[in-house]
Length: 528
Image (cartoon, helix red, strand yellow):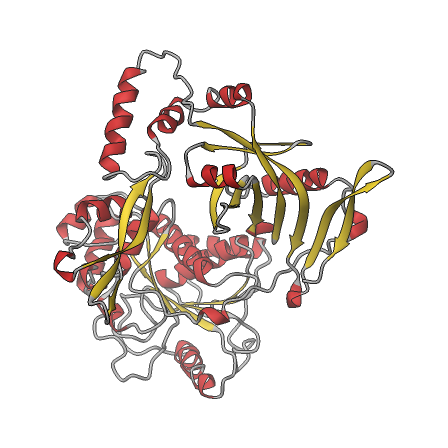
């Protein structure tokens, strides 16, 4: 949680000292450098670290990434017993478990391989439950925006499987025979879903699956020639692997992603691919207790969770190829406020999360910049309004230098808007009105929060919050603290950005000009 730098000449240690600030609803753990003799160095309180790390399911999931050895792995017999228990006394049906498994696989794929780059998916399905999982995954991937194809050479003549085939056919998902498949799968597909055999399979694969497995194995030779190949996603275990002893001769499928179901099977310990996910968020406590299962928590509402450490990524290779309609001068509003409203309405209609979130950048008289995310709470012809603590760092900087910039970024639309201007406080009446429109918990939080000040720990904030909560439990009006209110940025420049292919992004800038004593906005196209 902290880093150390030893200053050789002074024999002193520089370490990052954490402290808390902000309201009970928003924890911020700040690290600042301090020098001290090494004899006084001691670790940060574990209680403080746990308090910070338990803020969300996502953070809990990150913790689980570092503890792969603590995750339980099942033997073949144990996996079979768990399935029998689920479909026996616990009342699950085969189709329920198959639906949950297939959805878990599809969400795992969508977590890593975006349809903008990996759109063409081939699900190779075997005759058993593993194949059924692949059929369900293909259906969900279709709805997620992928273009799935299915190779299902040995169809199971049961209503459950026939129904899955009918569902895919109703979506016009193509079914390909083994003869239809190209010898080299690299040219026609971006993702290959290995749904041939699960943990209950015994013996050697028979035709046509022996050939299909060999085609997946051969794809790795393309790595040596630097030819682009599709990624391989195996469901539960890689087909052809031994459930417990893994890839015995070392010549089997080497998937890029493994999606374990219920709990990882013993062979998953030998998985060396980049992405290992666990799916099947349905294990009841009675099974977890009986088999002493230690499984990572699922973040939020997700049907999958990553286990093991994520792959090391070369940051310089991270890039997106944006695809957007043209953003032309003749299409924009003459008033940038109107154009902003138009784009904001688009963000709302796209159901983007917190479309009113904006980065606020300020600088004090020393010229040092600082940025943070705040929420837009009003926009009109006079400018953009947000609310905060008047004793915070941003407030101190605005008192010294009443200029700021705002940045909105709407990732789902490949758009951002940058706004620069002067800032002043809104009226007390306006702040008062907005304060009492907030939930009572947020009102109490604004009183407790001495924003940007150092506090001993989160427990202090909770204690003060609970005291005020008790004080106002009778429903009486909560007074707005004097240190809390709003700011309004009056725009002097707008820049609208929309991502395009080949980095030829659209950038239109509005700047004010006075013509015949009247303020008008000049629109210029900027180089991307």
